[in-house]
Amino acid sequence: MSGENQSDVLDFYNKDRANLLFGSDFLGPSLSISARIKERKYVFGIYSRLRTQTSVLGFDNYFRYNNQSISEPAAYAFEPVSGTVMNWGEIGLNFAKSIFPQSEKQWIVGVNVKYEIGLDAANIIGKNLNLISSEPALAQNTNKRNIYATDYDLSASYITNYNFQSKRYEYKQNGSGIGFDIGIAVIDKDKSEESYNYKFAVNVLDIGYVNFKKGINHVFKDGNTIWLQNNPVFEDRKFDSPEEFFQTLSTAAYGDANASLQDWGFKIGLPTSINLNYSQRIKDHHYLNFNWIQRIPVFENSVKRNNLVNANYMIQKEAIGFGISASMSEYKDFNFGGYFRIGPLILGSENAFPLLFNHKHLHAASFYMAIKLYPFWDNEMKRHRRQKCDCEK
Image (cartoon, rainbow, N blue to C red):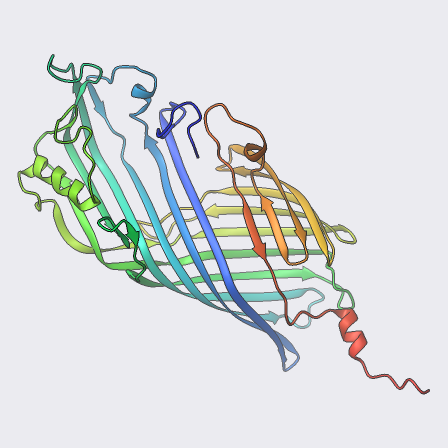
């Protein structure tokens, strides 16, 4: 997102509450193979993945006053809020098998077992915070009111691979954990055909957490009143690292730079969600699909993904494919997009309009690219061609 009218400003549309949900996902390389064992089909696979997820829900937007050039109220009580960000990698093993062999439909169950590699994370919890503002003295910046924090109960935990001295990202594993995905699907498919009539799947994704044993925890509670805005200690100061900022804040709250440092280690839950997918064949190569994703956080400090409802119509052929989609994020924001595939290359977007048209205040768009290769791909035509033929008869 970028501010169109105000540079370097996080624009919350001046609403009372604001949500921030961000996710990125790089998958690959991955490999899967299928085999028939005792007349049942089994699929085994391995994959790697790099993920980033950020979630802040219901942020009490105190910035709306300054954004609208309105003086901050003399007293303001913040609503409780929490925010989480995590950057991690995954190495996953997956297994799927067919069940109910006597059924006319094809039933499949599957599970992913994932080793989680924690890289960077941060978690901020604000249980209580009161802000007091007053008119500045003549020697101070008269364009800003003095703002003080009182009666606070805040905690902040973080760990990162970014070296603030060398300004470089130095990769190393900072956390570890185990995650699981489980699912079941039913497919109405004629065994003599490659396409299906319909398929329906239910999946529960990202059950697990990452443990950052060396994460740093700071707690600010029942300390001195902290002068935040117009304070020469903070004003126009560039902090060299998060720890320098927290030590400065601790000095203001307790008179000791290390008083806020409590202990080491914290856990971040994975973005657990339930996913429902339905796909209906309209005619040959034409499919109508519906997807519903609902977050169901399991752990207290879980990173959260966005709730999503999506419908798309696609045309799939061997060499080419394309489709259009409509989606609703958080059950309120409609987005329109599409995708195009030629051979193994896929280009698409779930929210394409901001890529094509300017917005007055913010740009929020999505874009994805994938390459799918099937070195062991098989179909009915290939199997037919491999059949032995006595061509002399």
